[in-house]
Image 1 (tube, rainbow, N blue to C red):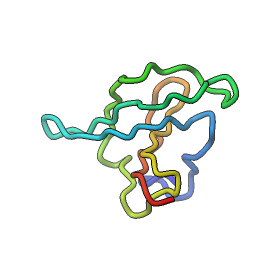
Image 2: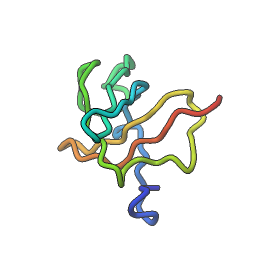
Image 3: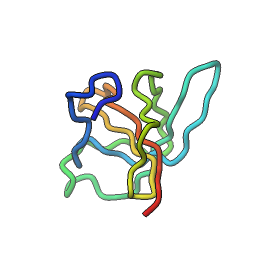
Image 4: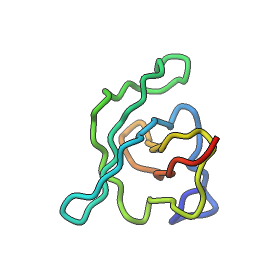
Length: 90
């Protein structure tokens, strides 16, 4: 669920990109796309590895991790950030 809108989902394969690198620069959080999975089977647009995505503070989901072992940024087709979920254990 989206951290700033708990009634709205942020999850879907077509929205999800691995983003295992997250850092803060000038007080803003950025996630770097590290996803090498093919886009077509997931039904998502291509985003080049290494692309940095600014993650607004209200879209950082730190209360729960995910079981994939990857940080994941969920993006709309227009590049809107639904949420960033921290990596967790498998």
